[in-house]
Structures are given as structure tokens and as C-alpha cells.
Image (cartoon, rainbow, N blue to C red; front, side, top):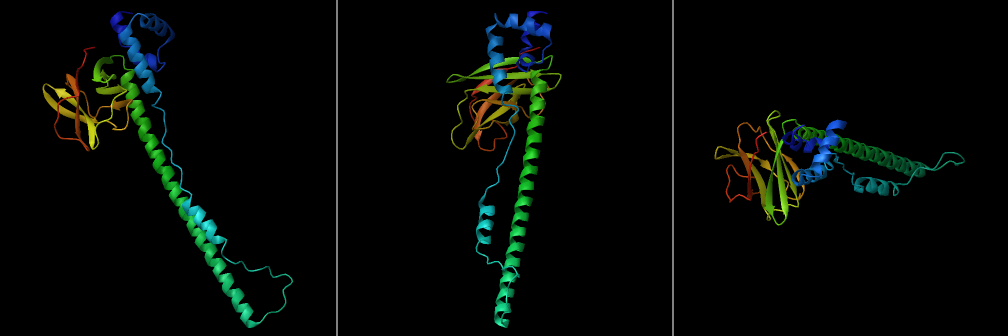
Length: 251
């Protein structure tokens, strides 16, 4: 296997996707290639975050309130051993029974509401998890593609960025490490460079310093990518000087 071919195996190695003979060959290469060692470190850190699932804990306020209210409702005593009562006492007992029944109905409705709400939360979490899984699978496809190429960029203040491009998948992934957060009310926006025309490739998470971003849209004939600081929500075209410009490396 040639050195050029070994350079393309960083993503597959980070995801433990190499057969034994290629893994051993790549590890021998890794000891002498500082660039590949750095890429493997960054890709491994990113891969470790890909399996994180979204979870939600239901707030206890509604359940606690229902349980508290139930304790204030007087329950009708059992019928055994009771002497005959006046019509007024029977009327009071009937009213308390009605109140207890109403409280039980209210409690059932409240807990039913909690159940419906919890079911909706669970369904939303499943959908979010499904989206995260699809995103992770697309990222993994790019990182492990046989024709994947990597290009690195210095982002200032010790931050590093690596873009991985696969022409066969026609997608690109941008990996960041120790990237400074954008100013308040701003966001990092990614762009494909289509022969000097910048095409939006999505927004980065403003609170993430280490991230793996699947660029929006196909690579097609883009020769590189850029990063700018834009107002929250993004812009139709770049409005600031680029934080970095990265030229794609040919396979």
C-alpha cells in the first residue's frame, strides 16, 4: 500500500473500521507521520461524541401538585359499623363522596395528561435521536470513504480545523478542536467556494468548541470552503472577512 493511500485511512482507523493487515500497516505509518497522527487524534475525539443520545427528564411539578391536592380531600369512611344518620349527615357524606370522586377524576385526568405529555417528550426524543443517528451515519460515511481527503486549517488561538471531503459520497465534514465561541448574537457560517462564488454550507453550533459539522448540500465542483462570522440565523452571502479559507486537497 502506497504512502498516498495510507494518508486516506485516518477516518477509517479512528472508527476501528480497518481490516487487520491495513490497520497494522497504517499504525507503522502513523509513527512517522505527524499530520496523520494529528488527524487521527481529532477524528477520534469527534467519533467519541457521535453516539451521544438526546434525553429529557419530565419536570415533577405537575405530579407533585396533584399528590398534594389529593391529601386535602376528605375520604368517606367505610360503611361497616356505622349507625343510622340524619338526613343532614347523609347529605354531608354524599357531598364528600362527590368531592372525593371529583378529586379522583381530576387526579386521573392530571396523571393522564402527564402520561400524554411524557409520551410526547419520549416521541420527540426518539425523533431527535433518529436525526442524530442519521447525521452520525452520514458523517461516518464521509470519514470512512475510500476516497476521503483531508485538509487542515489554523483557526487562531490554538484552534484547529480539518475538512474531510469525499467525492464519491459528494459530502464534506468539518471537524473543529478548541474553537473560540463567536461573539454574542453571532454565529460561524460555513461556505463552499464554487470558483469564487460562496455558497452557504450551514451554521455551526455557537456553543460547541469541538464539533463535527456535516456541511449542508453536495460538494459538487467546490474547490474549497470558508468560515465567516455572521448574524444569528446566518446570511445569504458572506458579510465579514473569512476566519479561514481551506482549499480542498485532491484525492
